[in-house]
Structure formats: C-alpha cells, structure tokens
Image (cartoon, rainbow, N blue to C red; front, side, top):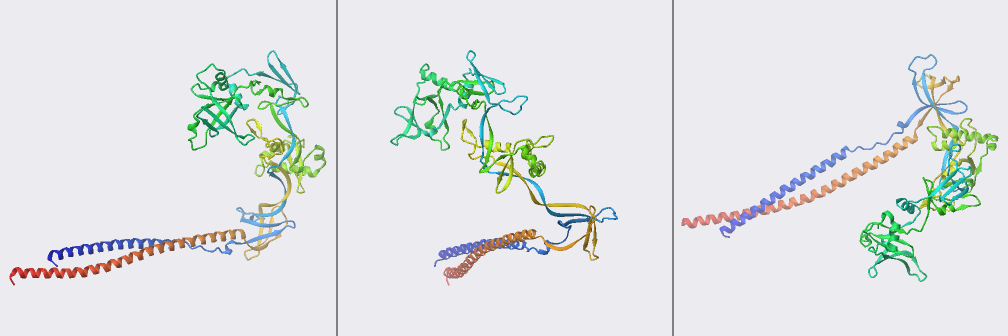
Length: 554
C-alpha cells in the first residue's frame, strides 16, 4: 500500500471512529432521559395514595331511645345548658316517626279530560269580571255598512268595514291564510317555454305527477289585467324590478328571486312566497280585532253562538264528564256539608297547598277559588273521581287547563277536532293521606347517668314522666355502604393508575434495551476500527522508515 493510500485510509477510519463515539454519546444522553422518565413514574407511583377500606366502627355510634307507649323516640343530639338550672341539665333534640295526615298533589300525563266545548262572545263588563256571554242577536245597518252584535246581557259591539287597502289588508290576507308557501326545490324551470312547473306532490289516475304551470308576466305591459291584478295582490310589497309568474288555475302569483341559483344552496332551501290574488274577501273590525264577513254571518241559529276566528272566538268547557275512563262528579255544596270526611280531606289539602315551604302556588290559587274568601266555606268548582279505589279531587280550573291544551292552532286552523285528543298540559289532582313523617323536637331535659358515663333516664320539661333510656349500638348502614362504594371506586382508580405507570415503564424499558443493543454494536464497531487503524498505522510507519533508508543511501 502506498504512502498516500495508507494515510487516506487512516483518515477515513479516524472519521468513522469519531462518528461512532459521537453516536454513542447521543445514545447515552437518550438513555439518561429515559432513566429520568422512569424515575418520575416511580415517584408518581410512590405518591399515589393507596385506598384504605373503611372501618365499620367509624360508622357506629351509641344511641339512646325510649318509648312513651305510642311512639318510639330517639335522641339525636344533646348538649349541656349554658346557664345553671336546678331542674334541667341538658338541651335534648329527639325525633320519632308518626302517621301525619297530609294533603298531596299529583299530576296526570295525557289525562284525556272529556267535556262539552262551547264558543262564546268574549265580553267583560264592570259587574261581571271575567265572564263571557253568548250572542243574542245580530243587526245590520245597510246604509253605513255596520254590523251590530248584541249579547245576552244586551251589550253591543259595532263592526265596521275595513277600507284600508294597504298594509292592513296585506296583514289581514296573511292572517287569513291568503299566502301559501312552497320550497324552491319543488319547482322545475322549463327553458323551452320559460315557465316554472310546481310539483304538487299528487298524481293523476294514471300515476303521472300533477304539476302547476306558472307562466311569466310581461312586466313591460303595466296596464294589462294580470299586471294590475299582481300589483293589487302584492300591494305595498310589489317590486317592479322583479319578475313575477302566475298560475291561472289557482289564481296565485310568485316572485322569481332566482330559484335556479337557490338550487345551488347546499343548506335548507329558502321558502318562495306564493300569494293568492284578491278574492274579494271583506273584513270588519271593532277597532281592536278583525274578522271576515263570512265569519260574521256564520251564526248558529239554534244556539245563537257567533263563530269569529281570530276575533270573538272564545272557548270554554262545560259538563266535565270523565278523566280518562274515570267518571267525574261535580262536588255539590250539599254533598260537601253533609260529608265530614270530604270536608276534613279537602281542608287538609287546601292547608298544605297554601304552605309556603311544601305547598304549590298554582294549586293553592285553583283550590282557594272554590271557597269563599271570608267564610272559607265551599262554593263551587270542585270535582272528584275514583282511581284504583282511591278518591281524588281536582278543580274546574285544572280541568279546563288540561282540556284546552288539546286545541292547538296552526295558520288559524285547529289541529284537534275534539277535546280528548292528546292533551299536552298535565292534570293536577289532589287527596289527603296519612304519611309516615319524621317529627323532631328540641327542649330542655333532665338526663341522669348510671355512674359509668352512660345516660339511664330522661325527663322533658313538657312531660312529668321519667323515661328509661335504652342504650343501643347502631351502625349507619347507608353511610357505611356509601363509604364502601367510594372505596371500591378509589381502589379501581388506584389499580388503573398503577397499570398505566407499569405500561409506560415497560415501553421506556423496551426503548432503553433497543438503545443498549445499538450501543453494544457501536462498541464492537469501534473496536474493529481501532484494530484496523493500528494495522494501517504500522504500514504507514514502515513506509516512512523505508523512505528514509532510500534517500539516506542505506
């Protein structure tokens, strides 16, 4: 091997050895980091608190009890009196359980209250607040175009024709459902004709879809009959810069606001307003509410009841007959005064419903309305029914509240045809029963001991009897079980924490073993490089020696 080649080889081996040393240093640093992580996990494990199983003795206490011949009582707390007292040395809190007559309120889902439904002329006067009266007669003044409604109390209201053709008429058209709506995706544009086809969702006898054709209006011909009709239909909402379409069959218009562009909208398609042309509907008002001429003329001659939608229509219920399949009975004054059990039960219900802490405000108002506010004697408005052999009471207001909830409005149209459809408002009903109730009492007492630190007898300040105390060791099982449940939870949480630490430690150890193996490989490689470097170094030395001999003439 030549001198130059040997030196180049030696330099290459030196570089490789240096690189091995550097890589070894990096591996050692990584192993140091892993060792620190392992130490942190170990410290975390040491700091994790091991759950301790609760001791039942911690939930066991000494209890003093006695019996007065009627109830078994227990002392729950006691402390010495703060001032000297010759007769009593402690203030004692005790409790016992006894059956207490208590008024209850329940609510019934979907009660299906059944009653007769009546429509009334809604009128309130100063002498009969909150009362309504049926229509007695209807008069028409042809000259002034005024209808006069007279109720059974001879009170009248005058209805005059609405002459405003602007915003009021547009609002009334909307109230009386002269505006229909359709989604844009129900339309198809016919490029050949320039028409829009609206899919009605119906099919003909042959099963083919039925479409309504909307033809474009000539917006330039402002004097055409259709343009005048379109302007009259939209009134103040007419936009001369828009294109309008018309369907002769239904007599409806709609304004094109770019349906083809709206179809690109990936969200909910916006609604396109379809407006009906003016069908000649005549409106009347008393200055506050509105109605149509058809509504005014819709009088049932047999009952003299006026049907006015969104104007004078009032709904009330009479002859309540059933709650579900339970027969309802109206409670009469005679029945109330002759039956002491009914009186006792209802009085207790009224008392408890008026209680500020455990009562119910609405229930109290409905019940109080059935009794005279001064004498507190029953007047009217209570009903009762039997359910599962138990008699329950309810009020007329509660029954009406549930019954009228079956009637919901959508665009002024009733969804329910009768008052036994699903009723959304639950029915409140009441009764009184004996409930086992905890009774607590705190008063001064004389506690005597047996000389061994335990009390043996007690005498209270409101009772001359000295009661012998029974000493019992009791365990609060509920509290102990709760503590055990918490212990099981803490133990599971602790075990999971240890499992997580062990799993992380194993991953770190596996990574450290890999680094250790690589470090051994580098050590072997470095030894091999050192051996080769020693051999090359000898060759270089020999070459140098030979060169010196050659030039020295040896």
